[in-house]
Amino acid sequence: MNDNFTQFEEFSRVVEEFATMRGSIGLYTELGKTGSLINLNDLIYTSRGIYSILPDKTIKKVLLYQAERHFRTTDKLDEAVDPTFHIYKCDIVKNQIEQKSKRFKITTRKDGNFLVRDYKFDENMRRKEETHYKKLLICNLCFIMFNRITRTNILKEDFKIKDYLEPGYSNLTFTYNFDEIPVGYKSNWPEIATALKEKKEYVCEKCNLKIEKLYAEKFLNIHFTTEQLYTKFTDRVEVLCLGCHSEEPGHQNIKDRSEYKHFCDFVSKKG
Image 1 (cartoon, rainbow, N blue to C red):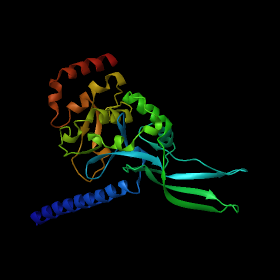
Image 2: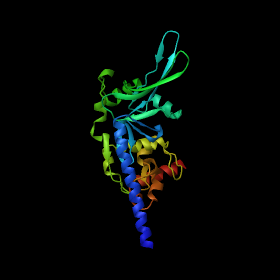
Image 3: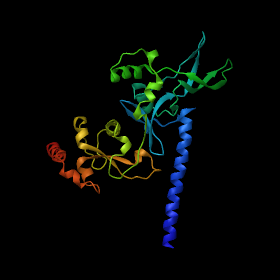
Image 4: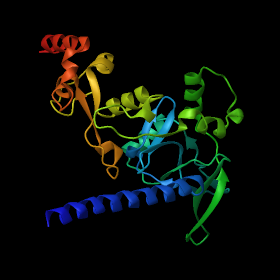
């Protein structure tokens, strides 16, 4: 009876993972065509761009845009506020995160066509809506950041979506190991780790120790708590200080590293 139960548990796990994989295939298709609605807090923002974590453990570099356009009726003519697309966590995106906006989509289309929904009112103040593809421009703030980060000085009209989406790190797949950095993260793992630490405001999730940003790279780690496929990426990781990380199973060797001694000195001075 116990054997049957174990087999059923294994079967259930396989079914759940298969369902997740099917969902990922559908999401890939959606991303490349109509775009997919997203919770802004579920994205990872780095200096190389914006990334989404798909259920099949794939990191996908994406474009972010506001998928709704609102027309304002004036005495002269209808004025439209065109949405733009974003490639960084600019001030506009930060503001939308604070407002908990639900009108944003992510996409991997390279042809510059974005599926937007227009809202406007007729002379009787009846709302009309139209959904169609539209060419959008890159956000001004994101474009300024792009030139600064890449140390280039291109014109806005020369920005190519294809060039942004196609570098080798735009689509990474990896296999989780409980205690090791995933293989697929090696090329840009430091950036993603930094983004996760920033999101947690450089505070250890176990002991609530606040680490100054200057020391975050040395004294804060990203710990993988589970290798389950069907758990959200953000639920599989914790931001831990070096002391708490060294107490996790299989991580006692951290205490043998030189930075652990420096960490202890840092804590004693802080206390």
